[in-house]
Image 1: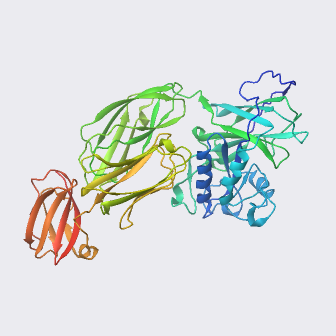
Image 2 (image 1 turned 45 degrees about the vertical axis):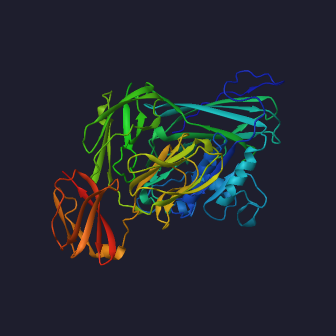
Image 3 (image 1 turned 90 degrees about the vertical axis):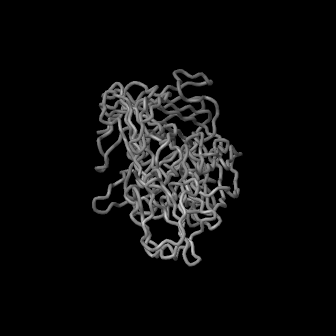
Amino acid sequence: MKKLILSLALIVSSGYLLGQTIVNTSVENKKAILEEFTGIHCTFCPDGHAIAQAIQTNYPGEVFLINIHQGGFAVPSGSEPDFRTPYGDGIANQSDLTGYPAGTVNRHYFPGQAQNGGTGTAMSRNQWGSAALETIGETSYVNLAVEAELDVINSEIVVHVEAYYTGDSPEGSNNLNVALLQNNTAGPQTGGGAGNNYIHQHRLIEMITGQWGESISPTTEGTFIDRTYTYTIPAMYNNVPVVLADMELVVFMTETTQEIISGNGAYPNFFNLPLADDTNVQSIADINDQCGIDFGPQVKVQNTGNNTLTSIDFEYSINSETPATWTWSGSIDSYQTEVIQLPAIPYTLQASNTVEVSVANDDDNTNNEADNTFVDMDLMSTNEVTVLLNTDNNGSETTWSIRGPLGNILASGGPYDDNQTINETFSLPNQGCHEFRVVDAGGNGSGSIAVFDSNSTIIYQTPGDYGGGAGASFITESELGIDDTLLQNIALYPNPTSDSFRIANADNASIEVFDILGKSILSIQNISSNQEINVANIQAGTYFVRIEKDNQVAVERIIVNK
């Protein structure tokens, strides 16, 4: 049930303002509200989502996104979730959209940019960026600000909106809209490559002020509007569960139902949680292939207590080896999340590796632990590596490095200027295991990155959504050489092993065993097929067996466990 409490507007003149607390009274530029029409069965909609997110990332605080699941592509099948709302069709119908994904920027008509050359406000995704940039470069005659508090136990949100007219509206009344959105919803999506685990963001779930908003008047220069809305959030919309921690608000003022003058957005502050002190260890970031070089996991934690988290005591280990302890210091408000990078620790690489992280006892110990696994890496690369990197509007936040087999930095770059393309090629001096890492100091990624070798083998690539940092490990083959045909005939077993291994179809072959640093530790000439190769004196870890037969060379990886 929707429960609204509206305060009276305070109307003043001559620039004198009574009661203003959060809205700016000086002339501001417009904020861009990008409403994207999307659906779970729309193949190209994930591309639209990525484009819209990139626009918002490049212009933080100036562009706000609303994803509206609507139309035939949004109709669920079978047990699929229904992300539609009662409001989507009405908003879409006045846009004259002709295909998906479509989007409007401030519900404004941009000549020459409408879909199919029409006169509607709907545009294809390649037009959104220029429309948003044009919008935020224009002055607005009304400023908006919003703040909210969410009572977790009672599932009640109080939204406070202020508006101030720095000029006159051409309409005698305007409409104030409050949109409630939900982020981080896992669900199906055609395209995007995630199947049923696609993460839907900025998803419209409710218009707290109704289809077209609350009528506001007068709309003349010097008018101050103050509204408070109290709304009880249900447990589900269309049987899709609500996650209070993922709520987002976007507010905007329209001249009628079409033209958006400006807007703003906010995430609620949370209070009245059941526990005072509780750290929820939500997950450990997926781990790219590792070389066995010291490694520190990234951990996502959430404060599910009423008190602000200012420190967290971590204990963590890899493969149940000697645990490390570390104390994080900072500030995480109630219900907010933080991705924390733990310091790197040494470990012995195995065929399958498990990272375990826990935090100290608190009011709920059932959510204090998490683990993740990763396998040893097997990507082979030439020793000539190219880094192709694009920066966003915050190029100074982007840095990267390539570490060699001993953990030393062999190549690096950044910080950079904004909106630059970096294209650099390096010849790495050592064979063995290397690691590429990119870091964004702002925590929100940057532009696209591709790292590849001279055979065009992709080592790492991303559209730019790597958060605070990411990367991948790779083995340089250097002088080892690889013959795929020979590899199809060679069988190395048992693998993993503890003391010895054999190689099928290896009559009259020569072998050489290298560690991940590229150091030769064993060499045998003219072995016979299935001959036992003793590695009992070799310490546990990942090794590479170079097999030469009939002037052909192959490389197989072997894991030695103790």
